[in-house]
Image (cartoon, rainbow, N blue to C red; front, side, top):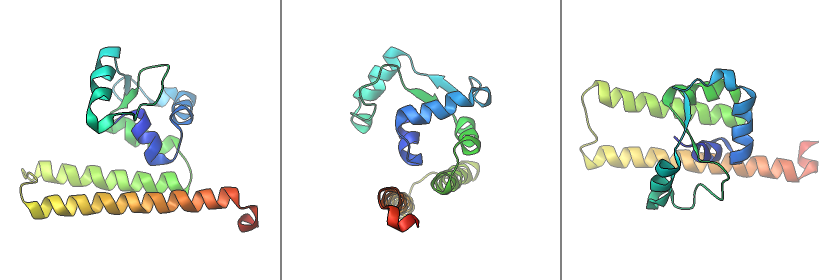
Length: 143
């Protein structure tokens, strides 16, 4: 997964997210995190799926392996980060279960279930983000 996608999932700006990683760089060896080449980034960011998601960057995006994402869970703190980490772990576990069982997402029912779970996770993420924003911008709620 790319840094800007993970930053969005965890509720960070891309620069703040990468700063947290840099502060803990010893936890991210090359097989956990690597920077895309200019050509790789150009091809990836030109695709419809990721169009305009990289923003106006000075550097190429960083890519995180599954191990790198697990390590992020030890670096990024807070209630929101914990909830997102749990959701990612469950997603990876489900994907591995399909692979180990030799299954593919072949039926429309399975694809629908997966789609519904992703949408539910997005709704929960947005609700948490809204609650955090409300807490941050309304000092009366904090008291």
